[in-house]
Length: 433
Picture 1: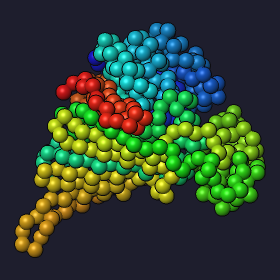
Picture 2: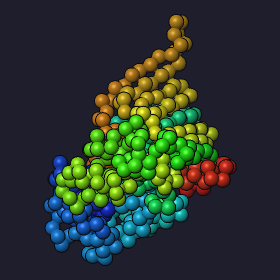
Picture 3: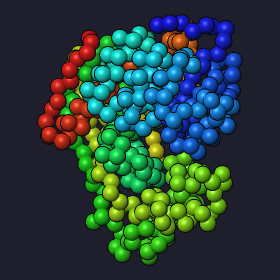
Picture 4: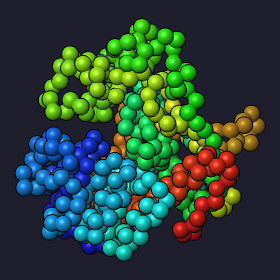
């Protein structure tokens, strides 16, 4: 890997000018001496213009596609690839071939074959590819990883994780939104939402690869037959029960206008500050988020459970449930000499050990991490910081998300979806031990 000069900022091109790319690119606004966004590529003119304004990119460095960037002389050290799932690999390969290092949004790709194709290209071109598995960088998970590595709970025998996807997140992204149909985004809900969690499982079991996977789940609730009696097809047009419905578009998108603004108002992006009237009209007509949540064309699951066995005999489970009251991620790790458990959003880790002293059964240590309130536990910008350090040839953090290590969670996800469809246990092909 070519080392970037330590005395100048690492430069990057944004390819796919969406919310995630802006989040990672925002590191340059607070640390201009370390990171600089120098170009943007996106087929949408409005997004290109907005990104150019945010990062002060001149017009001659605004492009329509990754291929256009790849065809020009090298203009930066790296690319932040924030395109939609189905374009990740097809846009990344020409950029790697052109000489760019890569910070790639998850999921890596939409199939096992795609992921392994990208891995082979990165190895052949000797480019660094880091995956945006930002949960590794959240203080909650990085502290857990350090304590396991230090042997505080002995050998890990079992890990139980869960992600509860809130009712407003579920309906906005996986029922009404652009991740609601696999044919549209080419990723299952498990891979779109929980490849973070599957990655955490394999990261915490570093040194022992996953071998067997089984899974069950389905679309149980968000179906036409589950709609409230008398429900219409659009919340603000023909629904007499809208005011009583938990999934009312008014309640989720108008009463909470900032909550999902990056995803919901794409059809109004050409308007700088759309009015309430314009938003209401959009929800009544063309905006897909105005549809009844029970009468959409969604086909992804709303709940799924995964069971994994690792090469050393350890097991793990992950449960994804959509439509919950409160969004949260939970974890419970059981080792041969102790346990660790907690809820990421609470920012509290509890370490438990057997305590055979008279009058005792166990002892506990409570570790308050003061985690920030964002849903990635403060990991987004720590990921960018680590990416910069790696490109400068410095030592990567314990959380480092190199492609070679990040593929295992994806292999679990693909095997889990296959298991659910075929109703059988799926062996995972091992890339390395």
